[in-house]
Length: 419
Ligand code: SF4
Image (cartoon, rainbow, N blue to C red; front, side):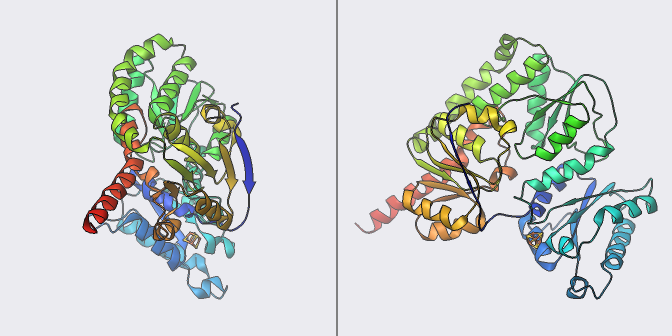
């Protein structure tokens, strides 16, 4: 392992909660509905994170726990039953209904697993009910996806068929491109988890080889291993380097020679490297500080240093699974400072002291930092944007070069105005 410097920090945190993941999960599985069991705050969060859907019926909602529920003066189950019955009657297209726990439902110890079990009996053959927690008591917002996938796993049947299972939500267009690459190198049996329809779950077993697209799925990986699947260790498919190594690792697991992989991907690699040049001109030598939020920070740091020549000041991560991240950590430059966990005030002090050119952080910290003249990039954008794969390397770099370029233009214009 390259000699990176590890540190751990605890204290006040400033991250989104797991409910946020509903925004990309409901797009991925249009036959599923996500019912948050929470307060008005939870409803506001999910509505503002997802934007207003004017033309489509939303596939998420909130069963609101009122103050009397929270005080134990009313039976929250009654409200939940009413909302679920109404939903199923109005929306026959719903095939899977996720009951998503929140801080309030956890505080009053609402047992959503038992509620889901009862509803499964009542609506047998019509809708399947699952539950997971999206509460802010978890480490960070991407854990919402980990919880949802873990909840789906027991429904996946057994097979001993040899297959590649690509795990973690990615954009459908990116998925199509990656599957085409796998087909061209000779891996034909490729499935994705989560699938595009919640009821079309892939079968898994001892000949399933799991390739992760996202680094924040520790619980899902643990359960996949318990089901006999083999996890392929690789860096994550961000940038040319990460994506190439990711595809090579899959090829090795299927005994396909590296030469075959290079034959297929070389034109993509040359195109992507060329497209990266313009962004590199802006990013080269700039100081980058990543605050912990999405768990994508280590892969992003690797890409932005190795392929865009940025200098890493500090790489924060809300949680570090050293086993899943080993290949990534090996690719980081010596002495990279990795800080697991968060004490937001101490971290902000270090940001101010180091005066980075760009800070990757949560939305809650971005505005105050911008007000102090420190440029920021919202980490949540990385999970909403199609950034995976060789083809997307330049688009990923653009997410970071754009704010710096915009600030350069604004500074030039301001100086010109004062001349
Ligand atoms: S789950 Fe908790 S952190 Fe998330 S919106 Fe609801 S109350 Fe806030």
